[in-house]
Image (cartoon, rainbow over all chains, first blue to last red; front, side, top):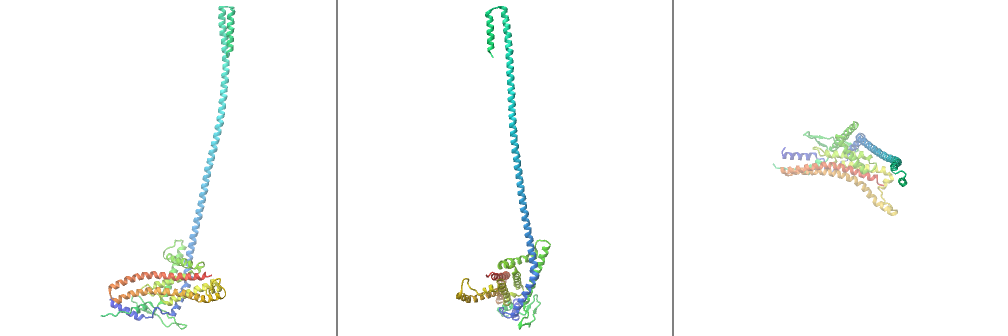
Length: 183
Length: 277
């Protein structure tokens, strides 16, 4: 379509459609508007909005419910975790206690054992000392006997040499006396 | 051949005003609407804007009904929302929660269906005007006036119900708290006309705002296109079409914006009346 033809068409349309200015108010149209609007309002009120909003609200409720459930589950899990942790702590404390007790018992046992050992040692030492004393006593007695024997042997030799020598006899006695004094 | 320029003003008025003729697309000619329908002496024969209002109402109903069915079906099947229903649902929930309930306050859910219907009806009327061969019913003072009238009645009647006769009377005969005797009478005499004017101005502003916004965009579009015929020049035509494209996009925004504003202000006014004590 060329521009002049378009122009003509526009001119024609303008001339023909002329229903007045847009500022005219047609009361009949107002009635139509109110009727159309009210009918639409009633129809939507009955068949439109409830279907849509009910589903949406139900979904909201469902999601809220799920959120609540999740929150509950989370709280439960936290509680369980806390419980577990407390149990673990308790077990650890118990173990510590047992260890401490065992250590204490061991220390005590050692103490007792040590004491007993010391006592036994003491006893052993005592016995050894006593035996040594006894042996010493015995040895002294044996030595004395030996000495007397030796003296007697010496004396008999002397006697053989110089019988009845009063001076020699005294000498032997003195010697014996000196032996006596020695422990 | 000398061209006689068309009367651009007449064309604009003819295109934006109501008529008993509907131009059909794709060269199908015109549809002459019946005339002469009378009701209590008023001419109630259908016009172009009546037809487009009916189309808008039907489309709104189909949209909401179909979306409702879809959302319901998906909900029943336990599937996540999606598709067309979810889109409509988002818009519906926005208008319901952020426009109606947020501005009316507690008890706003009761008015939500009305505000929603208002929003979608105006939106669809606005959008139909953007189609080729379409007409903007909301660009007609009678239509916006009737819508404002229903808003006015909703605001006042809901106020009367919520406040009771005595409380409602206080929104008309205003006496500043603490004033007594002659001062109170004087204040009431001065304030009452102001209060009544205040009540009437709100719907009047609603009516004019919607009408002016919807009409003005079309005027600009037609005026820009008219430049082509005034100058008869391809360069001007290219510029005009570019501007018109921009204007149409702006009008798309305005269509949503004005539906939103009408619904929002109606909610605000209802809320003001509900909590006037």
